Picture 1 (spheres, helix red, strand yellow):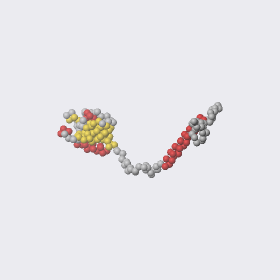
Picture 2: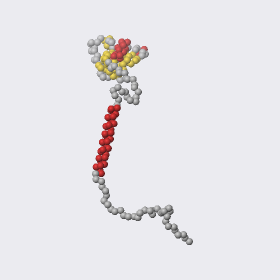
Picture 3: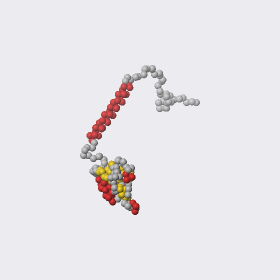
Picture 4: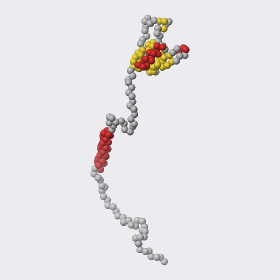
Length: 188
């Protein structure tokens, strides 16, 4: 025998979808169009650009106003000792007699040379650099053979003269070295 089904009670579970309203058809209507929608979007973008530009301008003005003043040092960095100013190096023209006249003929004004002083090279003496990177300012023409005294085919005094532009201290070293040693040049 089957038991009669009890009437529906609110506490009992219902099958899914049974509480949904009955289906009905949605009436047809024309689409809703907002007038000036593109214009509003453009206006919004333009106003945001203006707002960003105005914000950047205000920020820049604030940074300039709060920036370091003439007496202030850099913020966030320790104060370092000021860099000492060096006096300008006074360049002088120094005439130098080079032992090998053939080497001097290779030089032109504007060339850079190192001047080397050598002691008795035949007996193994030392050589040292007297001037580094000296600029050749003038290469005087050698005197005519009739003007110079010859001594076995060599000019008296030997070598050839050049004029170098060097600092005053280097000129003094060149003068001292040329009095006691033979000078040679190498192109830089």
